[in-house]
Length: 447
Image 1 (cartoon, helix red, strand yellow):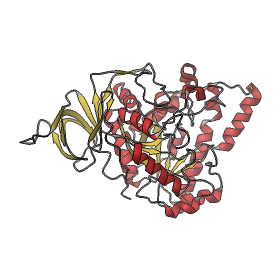
Image 2: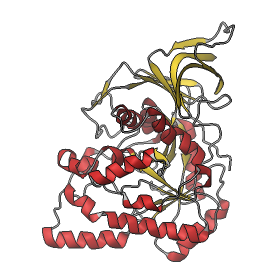
Image 3: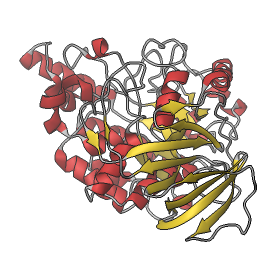
Image 4: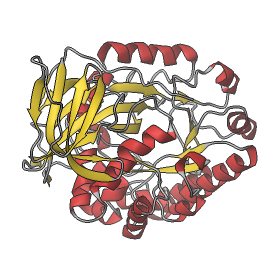
């Protein structure tokens, strides 16, 4: 089946232009600028009128927690990948802190097998490092996984990597990308002890960013950068939340950077002034910081200091988000609304829509050296999203697809909406409806 997406405003590779895209099977077979089209169209072609629509490459989210296995009351690969596709996210990279954790080759393979059975989007999985499994590095397939994830701050189970010899093994014995959650546990512990000694155990959400402070983030990130530079490691710092950490990142062409950073949508949208309104719903690790930090992170998108925008999608039941800032679960659901939120910020003049596409599609593809995804190019997989610029979307419980059933954006009206999403050339989602005959594919890497 051939599909012609006709007369869209194509946003791709730093440009916006009127054009059409021809899909043949799984791939993009042609990109036409202006009114140019093939002289003759085949009889069996489906033509989609994309007037007043933006056509973007599908979003590649390099940090999600889809909660499978073991935590599937919060979310699972099927439910969260559907929410992702409804939001224009066509590929995801899932984190290893599940139950059991993805810290053995057997558990890594089980995740791939499960995703092949149920995932609506294209999928990949980070391998989780611990203090005890550095001996498995040599057995990892770099064409199959995006990299190794290390928790340098507190984490569930035994995934806190804090032994110097273990860190040196991971940083020094692989050419694969090392991605880190960087918060200094010693500083967090001291902050917690201080604030509970002064104010008691029942601390409200306003204390979260005081306990998980700028210092906790910067010290951990700077230690990771120092070790990476000493050992020649490709280091990617997940979910940057402070202005101070931006000084640690490399500049220059993306393919020459050894130290790169990611920022998440919630750190670009919210600041600590919003704790009063949203409470524990915007409790994340790292914490939401100040409006000054938020503005600095936004500038770092525009001046290309930051490489990637992602979500750290981490669903919890609302009941798990109750309690003090010490007991409420950290994390929240975002993949269904991340692209719309970034395009909203673009509409408000914070970014350009071309910059949004660059940070959410092009740069993840380049950073991880993904095979034929992340661009609207002939010969690339047809992972595409059409944005309806004439139809708003109010986020309500009735249209939230996360298994946890809530969103920090509830009640917000986005000025654009996702019209259709294509995964590997198949129209998977259209105006609130799914076509479930097709599943996503395993992401492959060229490295």
